[in-house]
Length: 516
Image (cartoon, rainbow, N blue to C red; front, side, top):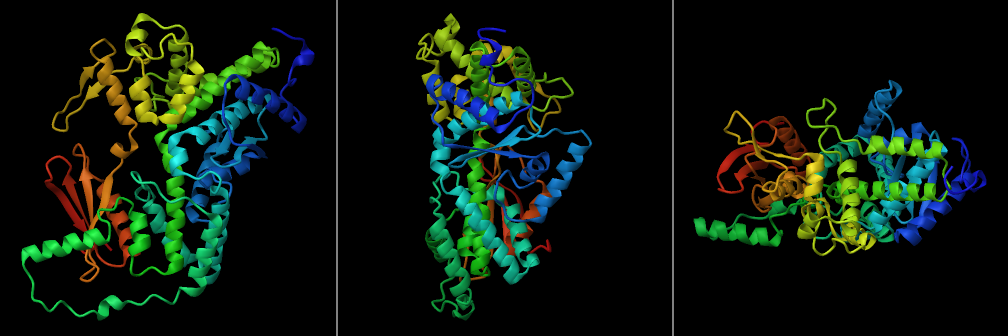
């Protein structure tokens, strides 16, 4: 046993108790804060069963969540695979909140409890607290109290208006969650107390204030019917409604003429949840890479100190290897690039470049190569990048060769693919740029915006899909989603697909064409 007697071990065997967990947590915390210089929220560790972990899976990982049939459906699906042995469960689940909540499975061995504590309670925790996307777009101190409010509010609505009435609104809101986030402007911060007060006032005092006055307005009598007048009117109403609007749920919540106050609040709840998860979608490689690098570094440091036995370290390394395993592209198990593998490899590569660079590294990374400041470089990268910019700046030629990355070009009109770039001197920049673009969520998600609606006329809601690279929407899901929009809007809804480069109209569809 290296460096230390058996009495120095944090734990013996696979069994654990809360005293052992506490002792191990303290040892991990010392390395995380003093040696890795991590900055974390206060930690709250919760022990849960496999059944509770499945339940957490089904409710998007939140400790407090309202009821909806889709969560139960997913629970049954996940449970079936788990009981049949076709899918394992995560060893832990971590919540971006203050305090940071980490759920540990009671079935874990003590070695795994140590691993996932380092991974989640310090790796993910540090990333949640310090990355600029989470700082700007989420409010960790308010999310738990807001979710508590949301759960109670929806329960109250179900009691008052009936479960089916609530479900149909949530069904439509869930269908639009991907189009329910602000991508380019910051959403307002949450305040649970203000939310509760505002919702209470809406529910109890404002429910009867809606009146469809639009129908009583007389038509314009000035006789203007020219194209110039129509364009001017359209320009004025777009300006008044701040169109185009990328956040479809926000627009429906604020502008729909048929929704009652409690229904608008349901849309807001779903929209807040969608916004909360949006930064996580943009930082999968970095977030998991950070947490994996942190647990790997801490566990090896504890082993060097003689605090972890060889048997426990072998178990930890076995689990770690499974997590970062990257099948080759021609392997039947290939699911794409493993974010754990790529993220961890890039973190280790930055450490290597800072401490033991090659001449190639000095050419590509002159500012950090040989500086020895790998901790500072990683902490800065974790704070100031998302996946796209992180890969674009830090993916090295050495790692491109290690992963044997290459670029396929695939033109829609061709019946073949061509290898456009390989891992050589000429291909490094092209491969890195293409891979980075692949992690740009905004570029890869459908760009659908509200572009016009005449509230004083037929109230026809017009949406526009800015088509990139000729990629169209699936017709079945497109038409089904339009029906959800119409349900929340109350009037006809149309969608036009416009080529983002040429402005040509590629398709048009409408709920007026018997989509109901």
